[in-house]
Length: 166
Image 1: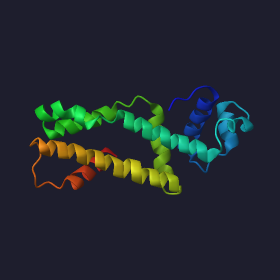
Image 2 (image 1 turned 120 degrees about the horizontal axis):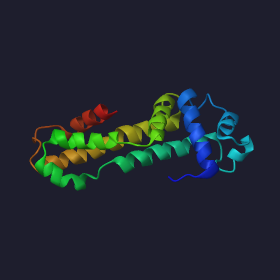
Image 3 (image 1 turned 90 degrees about the vertical axis):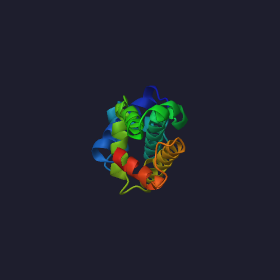
Image 4 (image 1 turned 90 degrees about the horizontal axis):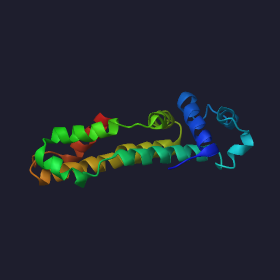
């Protein structure tokens, strides 16, 4: 998601304010003030405050996907490294996140999940289910290469990897 100009100012102001005070604790006028614009100008860029939150959720998801290593690009590492080191490689790649917005958007999502249905659905789908599917695919590839024993429950191991990451 590429933002620029006033829309980016609004987006950044909303991220800063939502991460400090929560979505419900921030009126649109405060976002406008922090962005240095008139309140009415926000509506030329976003439908409403909920639309800003939707953009924040999309931004976070896109940012996390962009940091996710393609499983099949790891085939040579899987062939020559122990599984623990392959997983470390993936975790370190996530840790190299150079976008301070991602930390703030994560804080917003975790705060809002208890009171906002969209944030709760986001956590369930994109932070719990989707990563588990990713890790399970990774573990299946490792198993197919003889790196993991056949008696390991891959879904449970994938869930543990994801919870370790969270």
